[in-house]
Length: 460
Image (cartoon, rainbow, N blue to C red; front, top):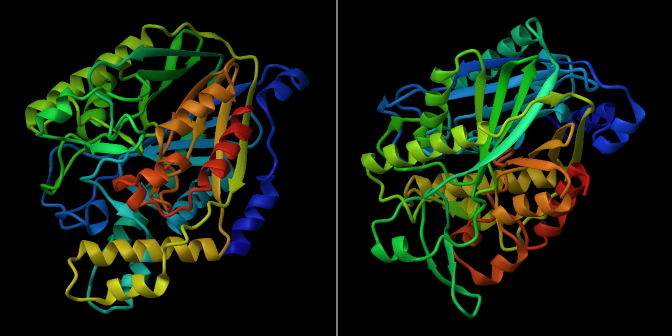
């Protein structure tokens, strides 16, 4: 288990507390000589593995594989590693451990590694601290299979090592965006008085949820692509919505966003396509999704169309600047959380399994905060493109705020990094209540901390 001292030693050695803005690099250095290599491993959980942290039916079979896909980039200071994992979430010290393993494999420091989950729900939601706490009960309650987690972490580290031996030049970069039709909708329906009037989740069979307006969304799927001459090597796609059509049947699945990515990958095998879920804490497909297999097909088609539309706007330009910025933040713990009461729920054998695992995860977050282990916000900047990495289920407003903070840059946001805090609403959402607020583990003051950190690293 990583200690606070070990983490801070890594952080200080890497200069994690300082932010080097891309404009400064562009003025101070010649065009960088970038190199890139992609990596990919199978991250599908085995039979009987807990799904969504053990809250829903465990694995009984597989619809399609889940993957961890990323790239190593060199030439902009120490190596950079960016990875997207088809899991619900990686939390707390487990997220730190994964970043440390990939950093060691790439010969870099953990603050230069971003691991973002796509957030499918028929997928692992893993926290070793939670599992250790559950183990003290002696009842065999599982949040994860430790040997499976070790195997994926080791496979990823080996894949990163191999990628470092197969780097190709990055001479050009391109970015584009395409509008996605009939996928995202705001989960939180506000009335004329500004209070929460209704709510729709990832799927709904209630007709009024289909008739209500989309609400505030980011309608654009964004793409950032890296080239060696005219050869497209890696394409990163970003869109803000919960990526679930239906789940809870025990069938491992990358769901509609993964299926769309795989379709594009099959068409263009020479380029590695990576999908990142944007800041979607309050965004899902409930207006357009009735939770049927037919709806999954429709949503897949619409995300795929968005990828194609975004890539049609790509116009490669020569790389002239590149940098990485990162900053640690300490998100305030919600003052309504009480460890003693939560542990009573964990120990209560009359509670449903999910209602014992959830409070164990909350306690793990509280104890992590007591150890003063920060969350790291980071961004990769190449020319006028910025790829921002945020934690957990950040609300859409954080993505829109980052874009507004850097109006002269193309900001593509990946959320669902360190999943320890669960939902991260904006301050105005707390008095409104609703599901997302009820499972937020941070204080309303979190908005100032997270928005401030995001603006730092994007250069706003």
